[in-house]
Amino acid sequence: MISGMYMGELVRLILVKMAKEDLVFQGHITPDLVTNGQLQTSFVSAIENDKDKEGLVSAEKMLRGLGLDPSVEDCVATRRVCQVVSTRAAHLCAATLAAVLRQIRDNKAAERLRTTIGVDGSVYKNHPQFARRLHKMVRRLVPDCDVRFLRSEDGSGKGAAMVTAVAFRLAIQHAGRQRILDALRLSQEQLLDVKRRMGEEMNRGLAKESHDQATVKMLPTFVRSMPDGTESGEFLALDLGGTNFRVLLVRVRRGKRRSVEMHNKIYAIPQEAMQGTGEELFDHIVHCIADFLEYMGMKRASLPLGFTFSFPCHQSKLDQGILLKWTKGFKATGCEGEDVVTLLKDAIYRREEFDLDVVAVVNDTVGTMMTCGYEDPLCEVGLIVGTGTNVCYMEEMQNMELVDGSEGKMCVNMEWGAFGDHGELDDFSTDFDKAVDEHSANPGKQTYEKMISGMYLGEIVRNVLLEFTTKGLLFRGKLSERLKTRGIFETKFLSQIESDRLALRHVRSILQHLGLTSSTCDDSILVKEVCSVVACRAAQLCGAGLAAVVDKIRQNRNLPELKITVGVDGTLYKLHPHFSNFMHETVRDLAPQCKVTFIQSEDGSGKGAALITAVACRIRDAGQC
Image (cartoon, rainbow, N blue to C red; front, side):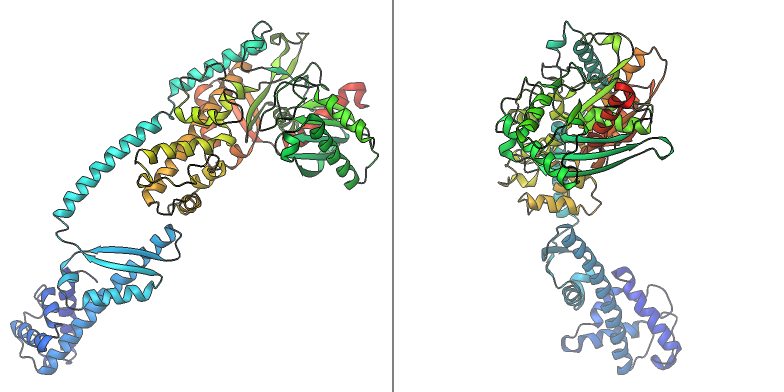
């Protein structure tokens, strides 16, 4: 319908049909007229030439060559047929080209596209009207695209040489990029090594003799029982683990109407409270509790309370937690080394408005395990993969040298984010990890967490992109000021970019946000690959650690095969399109004797704290607090 191979043949077929209907040539048809290929496209170009009536002369010459005796009217009609066929071809070509231009404009998320189209081909170059008609229709169909048409000179010769040169350059660039990315790719052997090292650190953390030197602290939580469905009552829960603080009222029902009903309110923790004095922080927390109780119409109520405190604590009993160190940007003074329950009670006493019975201090990971354990009795592991990362699990008491007693089990808060702080992961750490650590709030600390959690992945990606750009492998070697800004590449961008479809619109939009307005489609593809490699490594490292945990539980029980459920919470696990699959696959590969089911927690830090409190109340005096 468009190309030069068929345009002349289309004209011939139309003339045959018109002759049969006695519209031209007085109905006369010659053998040459009905022979395929007798009318070449070059004739069409000659016939449409308007210069000094050369077109009509060419038409007469061509028709006589076909054995016809044409009149002037026959020559005019033939020229008109040629015009219709070539115009249709130009307009069809323009319509398709307009669709391509729209796609390019949409890919770039640009209001107006400026571009150049390189053109070659005999029809475009030799036909007297084809190029003009094509240009005019393209501009009519896509008025928001400024298009320049540029004729190619020797596209097949010079062009082939240029393609070869470009391909060679791209191959060198690709090899350079892959060398950089290979440092972030982990083999099966490396992951098995991470699993082995995690297992060794777990044992060091459990043993009294080596506990102080261990990076994985394996802290006793004094949670010794999972929910059994007989818990009931009203409980207050506090959830402090980030820049927001929640207060919850949780109603637990037992029996046939077994359920958990929650009411909650979220409060911000201002920067001055996070990094001021401990008194200021806990006074703010108590102010939020007072506001919530008034909001619920329970101003003078005294309820059993579970406190989800998602920071490393040493516990010698369930209702006590000695803060070992602040993480996640908290630096409130006078808290480290102190019992957070005492700090909370002192603030309540200063307020003189209400009293609370603090039954349990729990980590958000433990809350996640308890929440999922309420639904699935096989759940004995809790995993958080969000802003930070941590794991808890039910360990045999006989292995816990820090706690008296050898019967039964107790939940251990691993605090595995510090794994690697003594060099256990040095041979897996890249220059990108070191740059992130160096500029973090806690250099040299939480090594494993900085390679996995949502707080740091975006910054790892940004450092990789900086390296690529500096070496001329990305963005044509041009750095934007925004890309140089630490923290500008948010981890949520990874999820958005990896969710992107073929058009890569999210990628282009994010790159524009970073000041990279002239990025190409190839740049977008590479950015997506970097995000994928960084997220995959994080998921695999997390999976290797988790494989060590479930395999230890299996070995503790001398089982040939373990069936176990892991309760999981955290934005990275829940929102990233591929993280969970990468992690599950790694656990399957590294712990083949463990059949692991993963279930997502629903509000582990709030609901979980209340359930732990409910279990503690059930155990204490047969449920009478």
